[in-house]
Length: 133
Image (cartoon, rainbow, N blue to C red; front, top):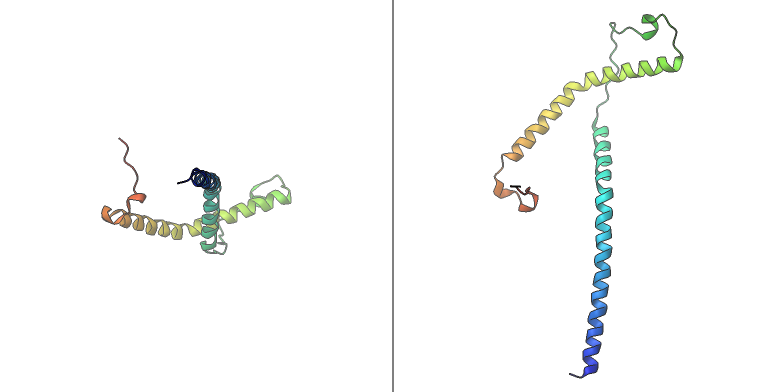
């Protein structure tokens, strides 16, 4: 081979190596960006999905609830009274929703236990934790 063709091939290889290195740096930057932003995006998505699946429960009217105006001799401002009323409504709504939440939790725990009972051979090695020690 002529020395000119060898030099041309080396120059082409060098330019190819440089282009591959620049692509590698871009990929590394993308991976770093994904590692920083993806957990927050997953958290927000999961929160919105759970909020969308939350059933609506009408407020539970109870004669045992005593309003703060009746139990307190000191008059409160309307904003504080509104906040207290809203808090009481949220608490009663959460109490009413508790049986459904517990049922969902039991279903999820059952699914997790079912998944754990599968044979280890069916789980791909990439998804297994490395045992330390």
